[in-house]
Length: 303
Image 1 (cartoon, one colour):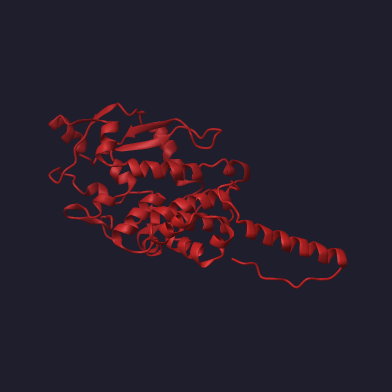
Image 2 (cartoon, rainbow, N blue to C red; image 1 turned 120 degrees about the vertical axis):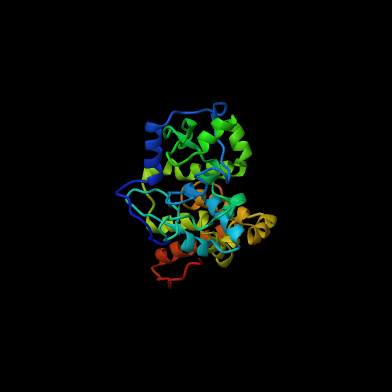
């Protein structure tokens, strides 16, 4: 996991942005209405795709890597920034802008977004955003609400007023095909706002690396899953194993289960009986040796 990127003062930049939104934007519900229209004829077309902070979810990265036909490792190294700061519970991944005067998105073309059908959630939802009012005792289910972004450079709101094109928030979300993004986003939120962090604080570097690979860098996570003894030690459905070999969505789903088990200590994985017995036999042998005063030679742990 690279440390490349800007280093904000302290705290998770996603949470800082959310707090700013809570203070400055009226809250909207699914049936609240707004007027907006974006098209190539609008004067500001493409200007919103430059010099902007786009936070990427694991599913955003998955969709873009599949679209580009490259590995997650290559995508992350080429197209993202990974800011690191104190007290950050989970990895933060930002879409990197080009090193030109406009600081435009790498995927921007004269005709618009070059990866439009696989564009990230923030681009898909604009000008509607989503926030949670406050972390709650159950770890993540705070008050969910929407808000409307109105930036000076954006003429889409005026276009909507001229054309009389009105949307409810829910109609906009349906039109932008956000269902899969929302499903994966909520699953990731359960991990990033897990009560584990309230009890134990930020992850140590080794666990942070594990979290990052199992959620964002699926190439490295696939190498870990199939290159170690993990599948020998845990019960995993054979059909699911085959899916993980070729499907990044299946692998990401497994990654979320693995994080819950290996990081948060939840019972999402079941140890194979033979692996459990092997551990028991090893412990019994160690105890017998200690009782008899006979030293045992150190053995290398399986990965």
